Image (cartoon, rainbow, N blue to C red; front, top):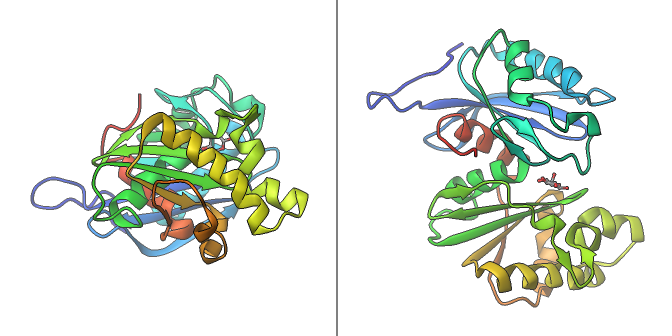
Length: 260
Ligand code: BGC
């Protein structure tokens, strides 16, 4: 199988992305012209406990399954600067302070790795190939899941590691107020939960005035049940790439400078 297919202008035409989630580690080759996966993805269960070393081994198994030998992108559900993990809100605390980029790269015999925040990866993909396609200006993607992830993209350029899920909104952390896990845990209706989401969106739009919000995470598949209930001023559109967004964004990140 091909590794780093390149076009006549030397820009890579294919990339490889790995999305590390709480229950599965998924990877695929990505066509960077279209944002589509090339063939099937491989998904393996996330090892428990999900320590950096255990996750790196599973990533290597997924990569081996494709015979990919080039640069690859990997998502992580927290802040990563220069390959170093800084936070671990909803994952094993042993990640903090590790050089995840080097640990994964070592497991792959030195293959180059770019590691970036999971919501940043989804944002890159949705902005370019998904719900943000054709929109200019400042786009904010939020993922609603166990926590709330955020990505800020201005005219195609990612401002990495925004953490709007941890903003304090009305005396409470945004993700403790409006993650979809909060809805599930409390058995809330969409109406009740959406009121909390509105508060979070208003806090963000008052701070940075986006042109568009993209609502991602699993609950975005039910967008018809709740997006129309939101009362903030900025338009909100549901994400469209579903669970491919992380893989696609990770592959994009491996071909450009998105980290800091
Ligand atoms: C983390 C973010 C992450 C989000 C979604 C939050 O708790 O702080 O970095 O993007 O969860 O996984």
